[in-house]
Structures are given as C-alpha cells and as structure tokens.
Length: 378
Length: 160
Image: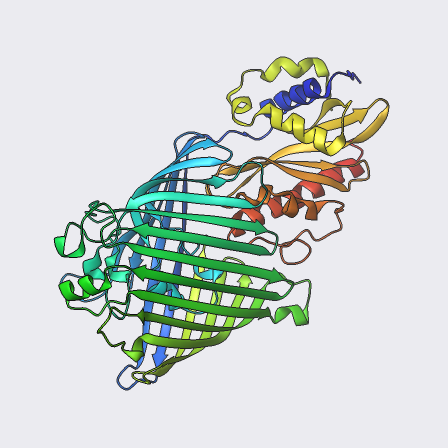
C-alpha cells in the first residue's frame, strides 16, 4: 500500500486525472441522439353531426447532434394528423423547433434558430406524459398558442449565485396581425419559421424558480405585428402585442396541482379589425387550475406507476376587451371543465381518458366530449 | 487492486480532463469530506474508486460517473462513508440547456444518508422536479446503481 498525504487540492486533482484515464469517458464526444414523442386521440362529441374521430395527433422525432462539448444542434420534426396530401384539409409536417446551442458557461447557453417562445408550462415542455388530459388544454391553444416557435437568437441558463433561478431571453421575429382572429386570438399570427417577416422584432423572456416539488414561472412577450402595413402604425414595435404569463406547479406526495394565467394586450385592435375584417380583442385573457391525485398511492406506496385522477377548470376569453364601438361575442367567453384519468405504467408512457364540459357565456355551440388517448416520449 | 499514487501523472493532458474541470472534483471532495484529505484510488475491474482518508482514519469513498440526460452525459460524483451510507451526490458537469435543476442542493440533499437497502426511486423516497423529468430520472437511477455497486464492493472487501 502506498499512500501519500498532500494538500487536498493536489490530491483530488491527481485522483481525478487518474480516474479519467481509465473509467468511462467523461467528455461529450461528437454524438447523435434520436428521441421522440407522440399522441393518439379518440374524440367523441355529442354535438349534432360531430361524431367520433380518431387521429394520430402528433408524431414527433427528436433529433440532436453534439459536434463537440460546446456546440449542439437540437430539433423536433413533427407530423400532425398522420399524413398530408395535396388539396386536402388538415395534416401538417413542420419543424417544431430547430436550433443550435453554444454553451458559454455553466450559467449561459447562447441559442439561435427556430426557438420556443418561453411562455407558460406547455410551450416548452409538451410531451404528452407530462400533462393530464388527452389533448392540451384550450388555454394552451387559444391564450398561449402552443407550440409557439419563432426564428431568433437568445440566451438560456441559470442565474449565478442563486439556487433555483433559471432564465431564458430571446429576440425573435414578430407576429403578423393579419392572422389574428376573434375566436383564436393571436394564434394565426405565428410565423413558425416559414419565410418569416422580420419587419417587427419581438422580445420575450422567462424567469423560473424551482425546488423539489415546486416550480413557479413568469414570462413576458412584447413585439410589433404591423409587418409594414401603414394602417397599423409605424416603427419597430408598430401594432404592439404585449403578453404576461404566470405558471405554478406543486407536487406533494400523491397530490399534484398546477395553474396558469395570462393576459394579452393588442394595442391596435381597432385598426387591425378594420384592416382585416375581424373583431380582434384588444384584451385577451385566460386562466386554469388543475388538481390531481395518484390513486395508486392508496393501494401501494411502493409503486412508481401512477393513476392520476384529475379535474381542470379553465376560463378563456379572446374578447375580454374590445375597441370602442364593437360588441363582444359571448361565445368567445369560454369555460371548460375537464375530468379524467391518466394512467402511467412508467413515467414515459401515458394512457388517458377524460370527459369535457365545454360551455360559453352565449350558450351557443356547447358540447360534451369524451376522449381517449395514448402518449409516449423517449 | 490498488493503484499507486505515483501513477497520477498518467492521464495528464487527456481530452477528458479538459472537459470536466478538475477544480470541480477537488471542490466537491472538499465540500463532502472537509479538508486535509489524503486521496488515492482503488481499481475494481475496469473502474476506479477514489479513497478518501485523513491521517489514519478512513473517511469514505467517492466515484465520478456519467448518466445520459436527454442528449448529453451528466457527470456526477457520488460519495459514501465507510458504512456505505451516501454522504452526498454532486453534479460536476451538466451540459444540457434544460433540467439543470438536478444540480440544486435542495434536490441533491434528498440522497444523503441513503443506504443500499433504500429504494432511491422517484415518487417513493425521492421527490422530482417539474419540467426536469428526464434528468431527475437519470441521476436518481445512476445514484441507485452507484450506491449498490459501491456497497457491494465494500462488503466484498474490495474497498477498504
């Protein structure tokens, strides 16, 4: 036996160097990673003529390549509704995200490409086993238009000297006001990396606090949407859209709670409405709260499988405020209650079933929906 | 079984050493075991375990390991005391833009004091972090495997 006593720094360094020479490689060599996620939906509405529909809602391939320890390409290629055919409605093949990450330090990674706007829980974390309910909540379609991705540059990381604070900050292309609608708010204004106009840039950022069982986030978005249309004003931030979104997730034993709220302000709603023949809300808002309980916890505390019973209540209104002279359509003041089960035999696979009561203030076009779903990620 | 301290120079300048800063391993061992450490390594099969002593007393063992995150390796250090109880887990290098919460002390401290008989499973005795599922799962599994192996080697008398 040969032992040598020396300064801790020297000793540890020496041990480490020795270790790296023989044990598993510690460096991130060039490597390619394939992953993916997907979801299958069955939806049966009691609305007259709606009937039952099944679809491969999403089939997504995750593809990443590390060129060296600092530079990584990451992407998601998505097929929606199984296939796309010329001249037929529906179906989509799209890049859901595609960017290069340049790792600057432990606390900062520069990013450029088609990036995810960091608003809300689902836009960045949208793999089906991570959320309850067969489809994403309406909040994540109408209020925060997931999957919202735009072209731009930014920096993501954690705040040095703190524990639990993470940030993302991006400069991306703006929305297009011509796509805004009364029913779906700003959703149609996303450019999604397809010959995107940079006439108006936008800024978006997120701050997030995490500890075991708790995650709280706040995010903002501000950007012009005029795209050079003189009717909507002039300047870099012409026809600005401003958004604030808050989210929280709490997990305690078998219980899981999450809630979100967002508010959108469209400054030139009147001009946009006049220009494109829509009644675009000047204010849009929404929130939801969800509680879930893992029933398997009652049977066995040893089990890592989950059978989560959940209830979610959401309220959304894409015409919470309108320019003077316009009358709100109460059908856009929606309230949706969803109750159901999410069975996760393992954490990356979910079998889902739920029942939705879809109501609105006008009482028009309301329905009840039964849904079944399968989701996976790897 | 034992590799002499004089072999320390062997790995100088390897690419691996440039990627996981040695200062981090040093700092990590210092945080877990304190100062005035005497360190050498014990070779078991194809892997190495760091042995930590102060004077004549054995403080414990540590190992640097990798698990795969979503697309990058996560390099962590796991340290045990002579009774094969987990002293601490430290994340040495985290390379992905998301899921870095596994490095937070508030999460890692859940492992302290665990023994090879504990489940060390997410949702049982380890609480997860929302939005960091893949990393949290990988590191938890990696720590469980590391502790099981270290404890077994200790029991078999390979670590002494």
